[in-house]
Length: 261
Length: 151
Image 1 (cartoon, helix red, strand yellow):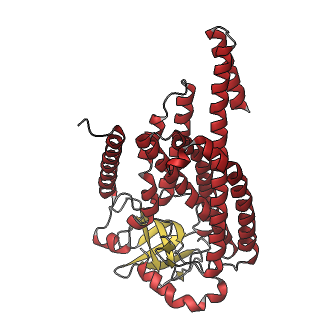
Image 2: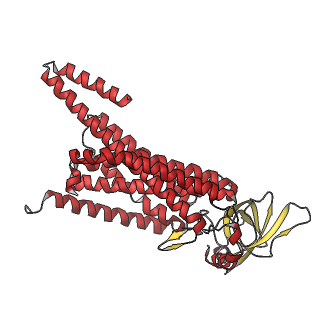
C-alpha cells in the first residue's frame, strides 16, 4: 500500500485508470438503466414506480460508501500521514454528497405514490439527511482550512472520522426502530428482491460505483495539479526576485483563477 | 515511552477515540430506542395506551377481511394487527394507492375513549419484497410470512 502513497506513481496509474473507470461506468450504467427501465417487469404492488429502485438504491449505497471512503482515508491521513490519503478524502466528499442528494430526491419522489407522503421524519430518512449535512459540513471545513493558508487538513480528517458514526446508524435504522421505510431487502446472502429486479439493480450499482471511482480519481488528479501549480508559482515568484508582497499577490490571484477554472 | 513510534501512538489515540465515539453513540441509541421509533405497534398501543388527546402513530398490518366502507361512502374502518394485538381504526379521507388488506399501514391520529383509533392520515408501508406481477401468486405464502415478520 505504501507504494500507492507516492503521488508520482499514483498519477501514472490514475492517468489511464480515470477514463477507464468513467467510460466503463457510463456504459454499464446506461445498459443497466435501459434494462431496468424498459425490460424489467412492473412490481406486483407498485407497478412501474418500482423502476426508481435502479437509481435510488445505487445512489444510497454510494452516499454511504462515499463517507466510508472519506473516513478510511481520514484515518490513514491522521495516523500514517500519507500525502495522498487526505487528498482522497477531500476528493470523495463532493461526489458522495451528490449521490446522497440523488438518493434523498429519488426517495422522496418514490415516497409520494407508494407511501402517500413526500417526507417523514423516520429513522432512515432523518439519518440520511444528516449524512447530507455532514457532507456539507466537511466540504465547508476543507474549504475553510484551505483558504486560511492551506494549513493542515487534520481538523477535516477528525470531522470525517467522527461523522463515520452515522453510517452504521443509517444502515441499522430500519432494524433498530420502527420506520416507514421498509427493512433491508438484501441481507447476508439473502435477497427479497426477485431476480428480475435484482440483476439490473446489481448492474446499476456496479456502474454507479465505477463512475464514483472515476470522479474521485479525476478530482484527486485535479487537487494534485492544483498543489503543484501553486508550488511552482511560489518558486517562480521567489526566483524572479520580486518582493515578498508581490509574490503573495501573484500567488493569490493565480490561486483564485485556478479556483474559478 | 521513548520506544513507542509516534505513528503507533497516533493509531492508538485514534482507535481509543473511535471506541469512545462508538460507545457514546450506542448509549444515545439505547436512550432513544423508544423515542426514535416512528410508530407504535398495536401491542404497545394496547399495553400502554397514550393519553386520549395525544397524537400518535399506529403501524401494523391491515387484517384480511377487516376493511369496510361505512354508509357515508368516505369513512372506512379496518383492523390493524401485529399478530399479538388488534386495534380497530376509523379513517375518513383518501387512502394511498398501496393501501390494501394484508399490507402494512401507518395511521396518524388519536385513540378514542372506546379504544378505536381515529386516524386523520394514512401512510402505506411497503415491505422489503420486490416481485413482478406475474409471480404474485407464487409469493402469497411468502407475503403472509412477511406480514408476521414486519413490525
